Structures are given as structure tokens and as C-alpha cells.
Length: 250
Image (cartoon, rainbow, N blue to C red):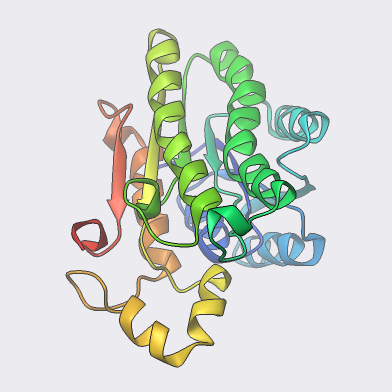
């Protein structure tokens, strides 16, 4: 098992990529703290893990709230003894509007969760990892963090920020044996794309806008996260791994 005796914290673990990754990590031997703002969804993930014989605990957390994130990391340490892996995955989309039409509140809402949330996760997990003697952090960016798309300005900007913040953290904490990487998913079949699915003409285009001409599955992203979390990626840090079917080339 690739994560035997490791402790992993997964934010946004109530569904989609977060749930798939939490399940994957538990199958590989990790004790998982599943965090989400949606209590019912997060507890369902924990229930699935436990019914499969794995270890998991739920923690309600709004990743844009410093006190809640700090408490999340303390809960991981108090429950399982430390933190070895952090998957900063919680994220949201934005109302698809031109920049001049966006409200400041909408901008702040998206950037607070997608970028500030990643910062807070690292801020409060890293001291525990240093004490533990190392660890692996994986931050969820997006293919839209490296290329433009109309009407998704806050989302794109926040995900671009995640990539650079990942590099900064990797440089600062490599000497403490903490690796920090990002993943950049493309179009993955999760709730965040439901709005696109509702527009049949748009979905026909978006769902095939990559080299493989299909939508990705959460489990495919989870395998990439698992790799970066494991010792198999022991010499990989400050990197961004595309999991997009080649979508960044379009």
C-alpha cells in the first residue's frame, strides 16, 4: 500500500475529485480526514471508507475561514497523530459574466475559496509536517489556470495563483522534506460542470475539447493525486501535473 500508516487531509472531500481521492487514499492505507462545508456529503464519504474497512473522520470546514482551517489541522493531529499528506482540493466556480459585469463580492467569494483556501491549508498544515519530518502537499489548480477562457475571470485567476503559490511553498519548505505540487484537471465529470451540461450545444463542444475527445472521471484525477502523495514521486516538487486529456493544447 502506497500510503500505509500515513495521515491525509482532503478538503472538498464530499464529492467529485475530493471524494474519489479520499477513497483512493484510504484504499492505499491512509487514515483520512475528510473535510467539506457540506456535512451530509462529507459524512457520506467517511461512511463509504469505513464500510470498506478504511479509516476516516469527517471535519466540517470552510476553507476561507482561518480559524476553521487551523482547527481542521489540529483535529487531524489529535485524531491520528500528525499530517503526512494535504490535498487542498476545495474549490468553486463563478457566475459566467464579463469582468466589467462581475460584482466585487463574486470576485472575493471565488478567490477566497480557491486561492486563499489553499494558502490557509498550507499555512496551518506545514508546521505539523515540519514536526513530522516531511510530507506531501497537492493543490488543485485547473487547466484554466494556464490558459484563458471567457467569462471565468475569478476562477482562472485564482487557479493561476495556485500554481505560483505551489512553487513558492515548494521552494520554501523543500529543506524540510515537504514536497508541494499542483494538479491541473481539465473537464472532469463533477458537479462543477453541471451548468455546462445543461446547455446541450455548449457541452457538445466543451466535452470534446481535448486530445482524447472525452470528459475525465474523478477517479482518473485521484490516481494522479495519489502518485504525487506517494514516495513514488519522491523527487517531484514545484510541479503542475495536467490531468486534462491534453486539453491545455486546445
